[in-house]
Amino acid sequence: MYSVSVRDHFMSAHSLSGEVFGPAQRLHGATYIVDAEFRRPALDADGIVVDIGRAADALRAVLAELNYRNLDEAPALKGRNTTTECLARVVFDGIVAAIRRGDLGPSAREVESVRVTLHESHIAWATFDAPVGGQYAATETRKHEK
Image (cartoon, rainbow, N blue to C red; front, side, top):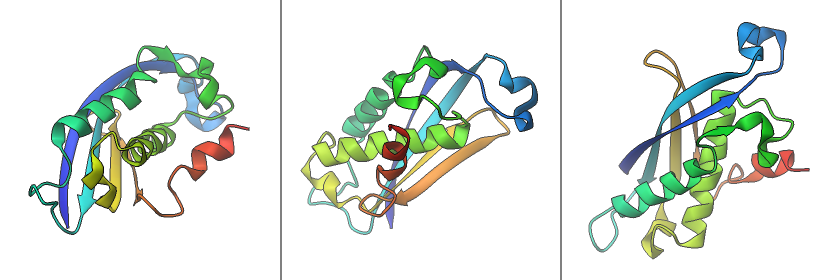
């Protein structure tokens, strides 16, 4: 399996519901470093997995929706605990949508899976990893938009 990864970051504020989160129940800021990895079994006719520039642009566009925002006030995230794990899924769904729209070019439709990792700090991170065309693609986010 071949893979290509791109990296970006975003800054946001949020609070988490539930005793398990202790002081993180209060509003606090977070800066995430985000890696998006695109995987496919064979290279395209140009010898690439995806165009790295287009992949970086797609990731930047997805993160722009989260950057400098209080996630507690974001309509698309209403009622959700915006944990690092949850946000990894939100970014995954945005990347898959970009692939399906053709934002990464026509050969990117051959990408079989995407892995999104949000680095919360130098010692903690969370990942969502799934097939692009599988049962996971964009279903979780839609469940919470009701």
